[in-house]
Image (cartoon, rainbow, N blue to C red):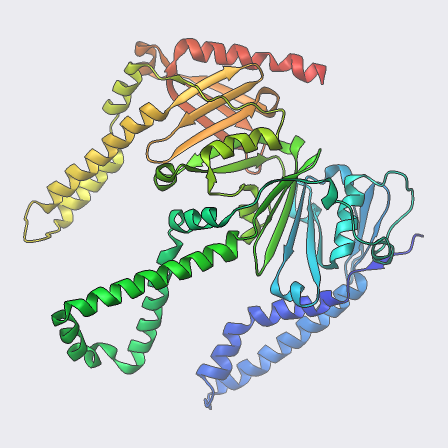
Length: 496
C-alpha cells in the first residue's frame, strides 16, 4: 500500500474562514440588529446557530483528517469519505485546464489554491484549496510532463525540496498592459461610474436615519443660486470618479499577463487577489473576437477562447477571455502567436444586397410588443400627448439602423481548414475555427430565402455548454461550398 498524503493543514483554517464569511448575515441579524432583544426566538436561534457552527467545524477537521491523496506517474488517486470510503482515480490525460486562485487569505500565509479541471463532471476535478506555491509549481510541471523519468509517487515534502519550478522559464510573455491600456480600459468599461451607485447607496442608508432630504432643503436652494458651486462640485465629482475608476481597473487588470509555451496558454490577472489559468492549445475549439460600440470607437477588442474543458464558477469564469481591452490589430496578431495552427483573414466576403432587403422586411416582434405596451400605458413627457408614438418611432429607427449595421458588418470566408464568420450590429463578433474542431454543421432555408437564393448555415463546436454559431442570409452557393468543405473533415479525422 503506497503512503497516502493529507492536504495542507491550513485547509482547516481556510474552510473555517469560509464558514465564518458565509455566516456573516446570521451573526449580523442575531447579534447586531437584535443586540438587546429578549425574544425567545432570538435566544434559541443563537443556540442553534452555535450548535451548527460547532458541528461544521468538527466536520471540517474530520474531513481533512480522512481525505487523502497520492500522485503517481499517470494519475491522481483521491480517497475521501467519513463513513463511506471512496477511491477516485483522475488520469493526467483527462486534465484540460489548470486554474489557480490566490485570495487575500492565501497571500497572508504565502500559499495558493490550484484546481485541475477535466472538462467532465465537477466531482471529476482535483482541487487543492490550500497548497504551498512551490508545491503548486512543481505539481503543475509534473503533471504537464506526465511523470516522465519517474515511476514513483510524489508528495508535498518532495515537491518543496525540489525548489522553485522552472515552468516560468519556458513561457513566452505575449502581452502585459501598460498605463495607456489601463486608461483606455477604465473608459471602455465605464468603471469611473462606479462611484455613482456607491454614493447613492450610502445616501439612501443615511437618509433613512437622519432624514437628509429635509435637512438639505436650504442648502439645495443655495446651491441652485450659486452656479459656480455646482460647476466646482461637478468637476470634483468627475475627477474623483475618474481616479476611483482607474484604481478599480488597475486592481482588476493592472498585472494582467498573457503567456504561452509549446502546449499551453497561460493567463494571469489581479493585484490584491490573483487568478492564474492555463488551457491546453489542443483543447481550444474556436476563437471569438468581440467589439462593443464603445470598443469599436477606441479600436479595442475582446478575444475569447472556446474550450472543450469546463471553467470554474464565480470569478474564474472570466479567465477564458484574453485581456478584454486589446487593440484590434494586436488581438489578431495575438491569436496567431498563441495558436500557430490558426489563421486570421483580414478580408471577408460580404453579403449580397438582397440579404439587406430580407433583413429590413423581417418583422420585429420586440418593436410590436413595445409599441403595444407604450400605447397601453400612454406615458407623457414634457406635456406631449404623443410621447408613446415618438418613442415607438425612435425604437423602430434604432432597430432598422442596427439591422443595416449588421448587414455591412457581416462577412464570411472558408479557406483551407479554416472558417471565419463576422456578424453583429452595434456589437460585432468574429468567429474563427478549424474544420477538425467543428463537430456538426447545418444548412437550412425558409421559403423566402429559397425564393431569393439565400440560406442559413450553422456550426457546432464541442464546449461546455455546446457552442453554436449561426450566419443567416448567405448566398446559397456558399452554403453548398460550406457543406462540401465540411465533408472533407472525414479525411482529416481518418488521417489523425
